[in-house]
Length: 216
DNA sequence: AGTAGGATAATCT
DNA sequence: GATTATCCTACTG
Image (cartoon, rainbow, N blue to C red):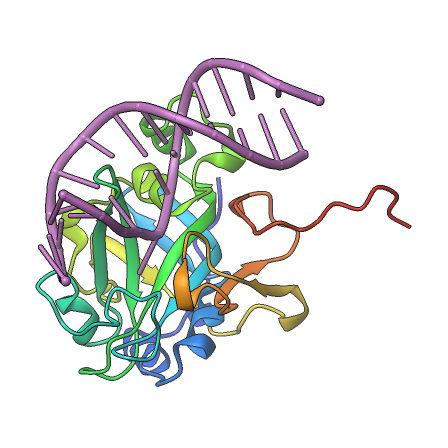
């Protein structure tokens, strides 16, 4: 379906980890747009992510109130997975960022399927192609990701769930941002959701863009 | 197009 | 016992 990318188009694991180690998760998060996530036969190009910061800095973050057994991976090294169960039903995958000890992560919210669509469709019966990974729990389901990816390295060449960071960032004029989905309270206004313009795989739960009756 | 309600369980107070 | 970084279905206009 798609060719394997040239090796120099992707950062080495060491370079990828160095990028993810950046202390400002709101700058690291958009760098994940356009990157690839592979699990078995399924490959996805990321189109939507959200940034979450650490202790005392971000009321919307799981780590805001400090380290707990669940959030422990967020305090570990960058490039590892942080997987949690949402609403008792859905697995969601984050990439841990920032230097160890400083909790931060980027939630992978949506992507476009580049390869392995038959497998993904089998896991999500009835979904249209552009909906296969439209939403954080849909993405993990289409890729077959669950708790077993929690606290494991995503950057290794043989990682079962592998993140490939693009050597060149997505064009800035295509990167949009807005409030994070489902985040209430004090963190609600932070525009730390980043997505690529014009992508049909971006999840639709954007906050009320008031609809004008007669657009120009 | 938009909105509403229910499913369901780990996690934390 | 309350809360939740969601998804799906069904309904209304």
